[in-house]
Image (cartoon, rainbow over all chains, first blue to last red; front, side):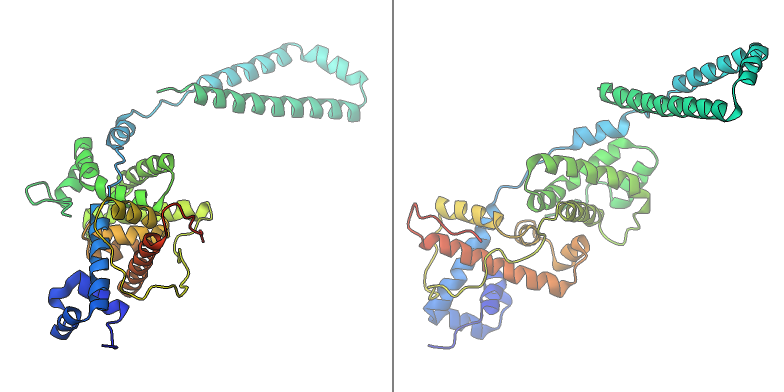
Amino acid sequence: MTDHLSEAAIQQYAMDGENCPAWMGEHVKVCERCSVQVNNYLLVFKEVGRMEVPVIDVEELVMMKLSRPKPKKDWSLNYWLGGAGLTMLLAGWFLRAFLLNVAGDIPELILFIVLGVSVGIAIVRGLGMIVQYRHQIKNLDLS
Amino acid sequence: MNYNSTNRLSDKQLVERVLQGDHHAFGLIVKDTERLVGQIVGRMISHAEDRKDIMQDVYLKTFKHLSGFRYAAKLSTWIGNIAYNTCINFLERRRLRVVGDAFPDVPGDDDGTEALIEGRQLAAIVAARIEELSPLYRTLLVLFHQEGLSYADIGQITALPEGTIKSYLFRARKQLKEGVLGEYREPPGAVRGRH
C-alpha cells in the first residue's frame, strides 16, 4: 500500500471517524502506517483533554473591588490652598502702603524680575508638594 | 462544556440583575465563566502573577461594559472575547509572539510507524510540548479539545474566521504530535535543541 491518508484526513479521522467516508475507515483498518498515525493523534487528543485546567480564583478579589465604596474626594488640600492665598491677599491689602513705598524705590524691571521669579518658584514648589502629597497618600491606601 | 446550564438564570436575566445593581448576580457570572476565562488567560499568558491581574482586569472590564452586551453571542463567549483581547493587548505591549510555528517543518526520521504508548510519561510530554506552542495555538487546542467549543464559539472569542481557526488548529495538532513524537524518540537524558 503506497497511497496513505493525508495528514488532514488522518486528523479528521481521529477526531470524527464516524462521520468520515467509509473508504477512510477501510483504509485505516488495512494500513498499519495510517492506523498508527490515527492512534497517535487519538492519544495526543486524549492527553490534551486530560490536562490540568489552570485555576485562577479571582471571584473574591473582583467582588471586593466592585463593592468597595468610591472614596470621597478630599477637599482639604483645596481649603488649605485657598486659605493661604486669602491670607496673602489680606496681608498685602493691609500692608499695601508700605509695599508701594518700598516698590517705588526699586526700578520697575528689577521688581518684575524678582516678583516673576518668586511666583514661578512658589508655583513649581507648590505643585511638586501637591504631587508628592498625593503620591504618599496613595501609597498609604491599604484598603 | 456547558457554561450556562438551563436550571440557572439565563444570560439576559443575569445581565439585567447586574445592571439593576445586584452584585451577587455578577458573582454568578464570574463563577460560570471562570473556567473558560482561566483557560484563555492560562494558555495565553505564561507568568502566574500576570494571569491573576489579567483575570481581574477581564472581569472589571466585563462589569464596566456589561450594559453594552447585545446578546448577539452567549455571555460566556462575549466574556471570552474580552479575555482574549486583553491577553492579546498584553502580549503585544510586551512584544511577545502570539501566533507562529514553534518548531520549523524539518523533515525528520519519522517514517510514520512509530506508535505512542499511553501512560504518565506521555501525559507529561504532551503537557510540556503544548507549552512550547505559540499562545494562540495553545489556546485554540484547549478550547477545542478540552473545552469542546465549536468553531463558531471559538470564532466569537478570537474574532478569527472559521477557516483560519481550522488552519491554525491543523498546524497546532501537527506540531504537537510531531513534538511529542520527537521527544519520544530521544534517548533519556538527551538535550533537545530549542528553536
